[in-house]
Image (cartoon, rainbow, N blue to C red; front, side, top):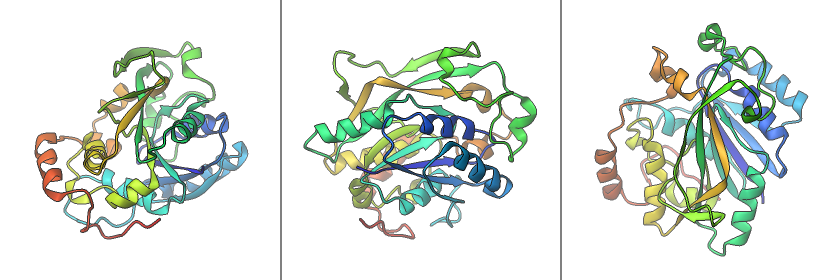
Length: 283
C-alpha cells in the first residue's frame, strides 16, 4: 500500500526533522507531498537535502487559491492542496516539528492490513518537548531548514537537548490499537477513499487551530468510520511551546482562536460531503 505523506508548513525549519525521520522508516513505500507557503525562500535547499538523504519527494508547492478568500486562516486550504495531489491508498497528514518513530509507517501498514473495515482513521499519541538548542535568529528566517544549532538527525529522546512537558492522550496500553474519539492532525492517517467521500476539509469551516481535526474526523464518523489510536508509536512535538510564544503566532501556526462548538454545529448542518469547495477529489 502506497502511503501519501502530506506535510504542511509556513514557518522556518522543520526539514531536518522530517527528512531524517523518513530516511529511517522501516516501511518505505511512500510519496512525500510538501505544501510550504514560504517555499520561494528555500525550495532549492529543500530539493538538495531531500536528494542527499534519498527522500521520495513527489512535489513541493505552495497552497492553492482559497475556496473562500475571506476565510481568516489557511490550514484547511493548505491540507486540501496536499490531499488533491495525493495518489496513495492511505494519506498521512504530518505537521512540521513532528519526530515520528522509525516504525510509524510500518504500523500504519499493519493497521490497515489487519482490519477488514479499511474506512477507519488512525491517530497517534503525542509527547511534547521543549528543546534547549534553538537559535532564536533562525525562528524568523524563512530560508532555514532547521532552527537548531545543528540539524536534528537522531531520536531526540536519546539526546540531552530536550525537556519533556507531557504526553497525551491516555490509552489502554494492553492493546496495540485502541478505539478513541481523539484524532489529532499533527500526525494522523486515513484512507484516501474516505477523503474522496468527504471531499477533503470544508474550507468554509476554517475556524482555526485544532478545528481542522474535527472538520475531518467528525464528518468521517458521520459516514461510518471509526477512529483508533496507536498506543505504542508516540510522535514527538518538538519546540511546540517555544514556537507558540512567537509574536507573529498566526503566521507560523496557520490559525488560532478556535470556536469548536460553533464549528461542530455547522458540521452537523453541512453533512458528510463538501460540495462548495473549489475542487472535487477523485480516486
